[in-house]
Image (tube, rainbow, N blue to C red):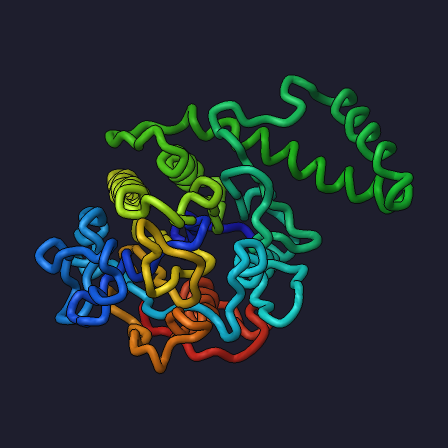
Length: 377
């Protein structure tokens, strides 16, 4: 399948560490909010109000502009049944849609396999950051993972037979552990895809001009890389990145740390879409922001501990802006695990909407069942 410049593109920004949903989308009209958050509660006159019940943290001014334009969807109470409070397990559940067992295939890996079943484009999916998020992992699906687009390359400067010799070396290295024939075929196939992807991606920065300036933070630079890749028209359909490892794990000093994090993310989202709009490439781009879980209802004096239900966002020109879902009850009788918001929206509902209404695919095999969609597109 050869993609076109108008095909829908998904960008994902994972907020690593467990974003405090209560401090992000603030239930300012609920008196229990201030009772349970004596240290962290935000004065009502500082909340960026979305309606009569909830509003954004004051550090999220740039995102509020998207709300005012009708291009920001806010998902309340997002999570899954029987929540895990482990960063690794919870993120794995979000990545594989497997809350009851350890999954081996990522939901976006399945999307990519359907978008490019014959592997005609080695850059249909690209991740920016260390390693490969399990969300994009699926056997037979090539995904480029880039640490720094400006210096990206694999076996740079090596061509022809030298490259083949290098791949043979890799194959022989791993052959004793996983079987000679399989190792050689697998290493050569994935290595060749990686080499092709490196060669193509390395041209993106040289093709890029812009009137905007991204922040020098990791989030800013990776989102710049996403824009560079999208604007280069490589046919990339899924672009993924993650905020600095566990940055949103705000057990202490949350008031300042959380504000700084969301100020960076909000400014970067504004810069990103300004960049795309300047190039006429915003209309077919959807940005999804999520975190692996929320935080406890009660503050611990200066921060919050691992929790359950949280919030997520979708931004884009094709987004039907609004608040979706119901804010979980803060009544003590409704708490789970002695101090947690109970999820009121399954994250797979949002995924189902993206898979079906954005990519035009059947969501059932991707997310493992039938889940009601959220009408935000």
